[in-house]
Length: 402
Image 1 (tube, rainbow, N blue to C red):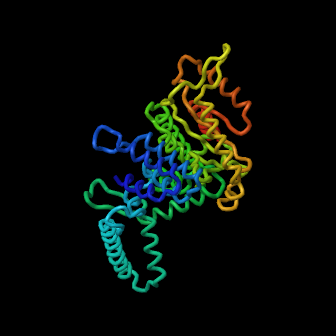
Image 2: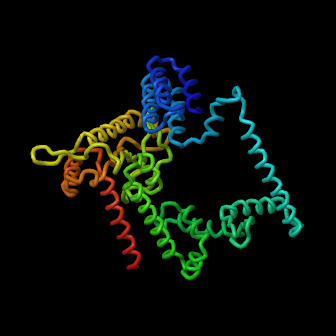
Image 3: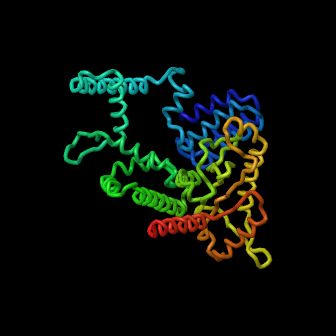
């Protein structure tokens, strides 16, 4: 209902008839089911994206922005409370009193805790300055990330003092450049929360072995989760994207991280924007894995060649690159990302989807196809997993040898 109300408001603001009809088509789809419930699913997201694209072609940028929020809400990337507050859909445009009161009670409880904690601190340190009291609160807040719920004390919680300082020390080591690790802050918190890891760190002068082992475990766990999603026939592109986010190491050592901004060109949003070592953008376009509809390859003159699904995905990636080329000056000046030498990777399908095609011949057909493309590469999810496993095994062997 929230989404429908927002779309009806969007429809009223459309200046272009074609854009308005595209928005109305979304609403029609939502009411096309047999029951009284509104329809959603992939078709809803597709129609929303189509309406957003038409709005971009008509240069109705405010409509593009609103439909971008619609897509994000439909995909669960914007929560209902934020969505309703953003568009003031109910209560005649007034702010939500329930959310307001909840936030007010939370702030009241927080301030009561601060008064109580501050009073206890001043009783123990009557000579403390204002700066020292503020530093005490800051440290308390940092340690709250490590809140514990002791099993022998039901209903009670404990904030371990000094745990945040240990995590900060670990994070600085991780960021120092001496160790290759993707998420220093997250890894530091996990290690600092583990008594076993801290004991090992205490026994090792620099903690390198422990930190490397922790990172290898994190990568292995991420790879297991990715494999689970890839092998799920019902997994959508969004779920594959969530399993890959924050794991740019899986794509190889050419990349130094992910760009924070995914919407680089009006009307388009890339799935995973990677940054190469030379500072250029590398776009990863995700298609379904085991749930891919249609074959990856087909027989042509006694040989396997890429099928329509592969050509369509490559065409979409090429369109992204064209858009990045056309807006490269704006993107470089406003986002600091170089797109003039941008490239793309299309992840699509799995050999198990097409058992009649031998895996080795299927991979060879895609490699031959890639050899004739200059800026786009096509890879199956299984080949990506195999490459990542080899990389992880090599790192583990190197660590053991060291």
